[in-house]
Image 1 (cartoon, one colour):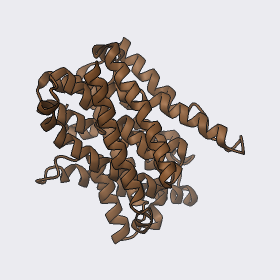
Image 2: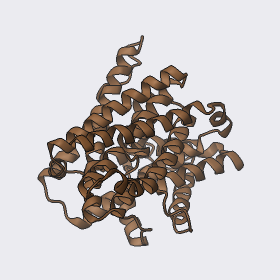
Image 3: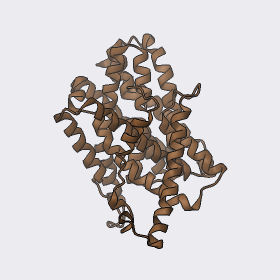
Length: 364
């Protein structure tokens, strides 16, 4: 399940999955309209999408550089977007396209993540494994949100860090932000913090397996239940053996499946805490329903392996573009203003998820 820089043919197929249809174009433009007003609207969208696509290409290419292969394109895209906007400035005519990438593409990418999971895979780690993953997720989320409140971290930022630590890194942060509606700087901060400690876990956990007396199954379950990003879990798991890597991957994908109920719960909390019922976020976002439906479809229907790989690549491209857009809209001065408390919160959450899941694995 390692990602490689795709060739031109794969990129063309993958990009065909982008949720841009004739209905997304301004009325009349798709039929050849020469209306200056409509052309102006479309011209305001295209530059932003092109800029985001360029940064995405840079992120994929940068992984070929020495020392950067450890990081996913999503993480590199956030950094590249952040550097671009804060050094060169944000082009005003690109804002509409950047907003499109940040909203439409991210939601659609999360839906496509459902193709990476089947109910049979979840069953593969057994009821005990599912229980460990679920208990670790719930306990870590509650611990992080509670500690964030105690040390004075903004509630929305604390929720993003909690989701990224307890579920699946940057993807969970993006999905959670759809219902929490935090600032772009908070999303960028959360992604950066999660990346830092997830990388530490990826490099350090395999060294700890002999110390804790973990066999391949136990280590795979621990890595899958506690390390942040899917790519980081795979990297750590397969360092300890093939069976360990396979177990870690399934455990991690089980956490990904729990993204849907977590987002629904946060949506309900947002609705209940809002004084304006009409302004509250819906408790069941459309992309969550679609994600669950795709998992069910993937469990019932055999999808050709080639199509599977194209869909997986499409999902990663769109996630990368969305996070590049977030990086473009983030302000470094705003990141500095958050101080060290959110970073300490992310570190505490990292220690908690590692320790809590290890105890459950040893007890099991």
